[in-house]
Image (tube, rainbow, N blue to C red):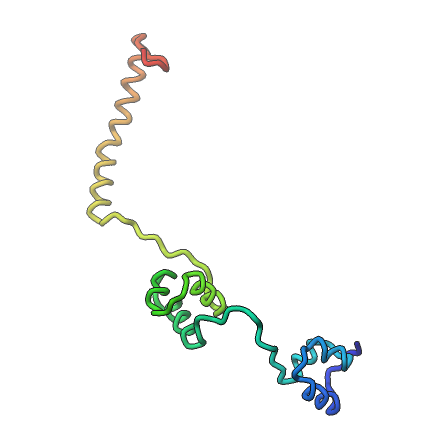
Length: 152
């Protein structure tokens, strides 16, 4: 197929007459590439067969807005959308938006400030016991009363 950046007026009129056909058929008839026909004409592909979408453009935008502006899980967005839609469909709509990225939510410590401080204080108090235990073990070995792995 010849390379050319422009379509002639004659070719454009032929393409417009053939708009009911597929791009592949038009490209073969005119000896032009499919990408040229897509770029230079107001061609829209035929509707595909299959199950129709549950959501329209407006509900897609609402789902994408909820995902980007609020810290909601996919299941929460599914429930808030008031549509009979699966969580997988909600996930696909978020991915289709193109500007959302996968990121894990920030983890928060389940402990309160008081709980953290009391645990630290307990650890500080019991750090000395570790040294006492080691001293006891070493003194038992010196006395000849060391225990083997069976504890006897």
